[in-house]
Image (cartoon, rainbow, N blue to C red):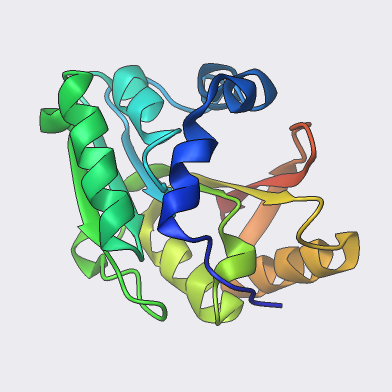
Amino acid sequence: MAGRVCPWWLGYFHLGPIRRMLHNPEKILSPYVRRGMKVLDIGPGMGFFTLEMARLVGREGATVAIDLQPKMIRALERRAGRAGLADRIDARVCTAGDLGADDLAGSIDFSIGFYVVHEVPDVSRFMQQVYALLVPAGKFLVVEPENHISREDFELNIGTAREAGFSVIERPEIRKSFSVLLVKS
């Protein structure tokens, strides 16, 4: 099921106003992210959701962003600096097979993987790693594009998440996407 990784330069197109109308970060995140939380954006690209997460958790919280592509992380850091949020975001580069975040084990309240799971080479390992990072009852919002993944493949990924220990809480409606909110059981 793993596909190609989105090229770094497409990240600029993912920041535009049309995307904001389609996937408003504040509207998507505000039901789950609260002031003081520790949150994780996996595959953040140039920070479309990361910056809003940092705003929502405030100075009392912490935001971590992990991406495979150094150019995406550098762009995210520039955008965070311009937005006055650089001190609230821990931006990291990972490898294709490892999030490289063992230091965060058991400390994340909420994580989002927006349009990223279909790019992961080993979904089972990925789900196990995310599960290990979450606090008990921590939540993981998985959103995948309808035009890149079939409903059947999305359901297989949910099954893989269940095997890792997650339970399904809800299936929020997000335009042009398949989505599921998971909880660490």
